[in-house]
Image 1 (cartoon, rainbow, N blue to C red):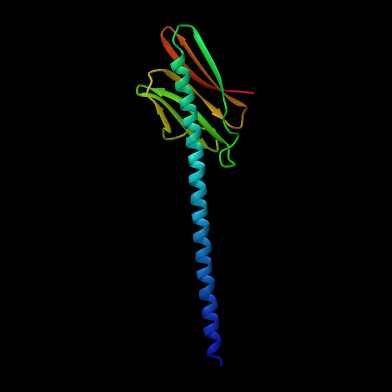
Image 2: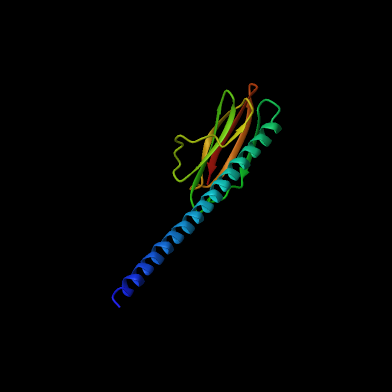
Length: 149
């Protein structure tokens, strides 16, 4: 009889280990799906800002012309605060975004706008609403992303 009890103990232990492996695997798969969904939402926000920026730039044609648009951005992405930033260089305008803190550190360009304009500004979802301003002065198009209360 004593030889039967260790067999049950080993079987219960093996079932416990297999159950733990299944639970961990399901948890990891769920977290992976959630992360992909949050990244897709952030990408959608970046694409929306890029599309609205391009629309404003295409409507500005004359010197001393200003166009302003309030952007409809979500308060959170995946129950987290986020930020969106505009920046320009010699190749065009980059719209970047990230989750969490508002510091723009080592982020990869999310969406590029192939336009030779000056662009700057950062919007954080912890503040008010996002305001996109486009102006032309001395044949230079300037695009600015700011926050309003």
